[in-house]
Image (cartoon, rainbow, N blue to C red; front, side):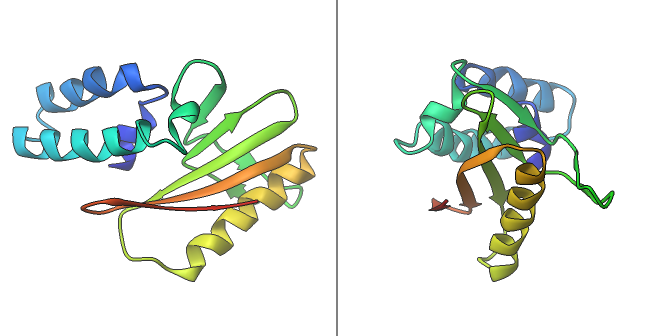
Length: 135
């Protein structure tokens, strides 16, 4: 799931990316349909769809480095402008408090880099997606 989402910057890339994974034999038809359903729930969600269009600059799986040299890799960063950023992280397992702690680490490093974190979004992807948003 994370590898697929790494290739998706906007809604229009969902089908081409899934087809590429299917054509290369990395996923079967059943898995492709399941992933498509899950991903479309995310990119079409009223609270999320604005982050999956071409209006903003976004980076998937891009390293950020703290002042202490710690390397972190958020699933998705969406830059609303030169200073404001939204952090999005996907989880395929059960809810865990450590996931919120991880988002706060990303926030701290981005703030060290003089960005303002407008929102932190945690998306749990199971049969239905579940979203947690915080500032």
